[in-house]
Amino acid sequence: MRKEYKKRVTLINKWGLHAKTAFAFAKEAMKYESVITVEKDGKSADGKRMDDLLMLCAEYSDTLVITATGEDGEKALSGLAMVVSSGFGEE
Image (tube, rainbow, N blue to C red; front, side, top):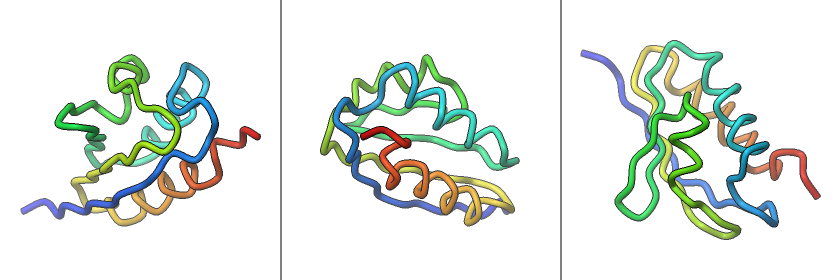
């Protein structure tokens, strides 16, 4: 049975998920074997696909639920949460 890990994160960067930040998230997610899913307001996206992430229309202060399913899921959540909590390097 594959392990599933979940974490809630809040977008702190001014513009939320846009092309640059969605790319940064997907790039980090692709480092891991785990299946990464991101949810917002009942919508779900593949965390490794930038276009899926953009469809969430996530804005500043929105809360996302990241789910990582797989052996490296805990490590994946840690890395992804760090990217989000850093504001994707934006001011």
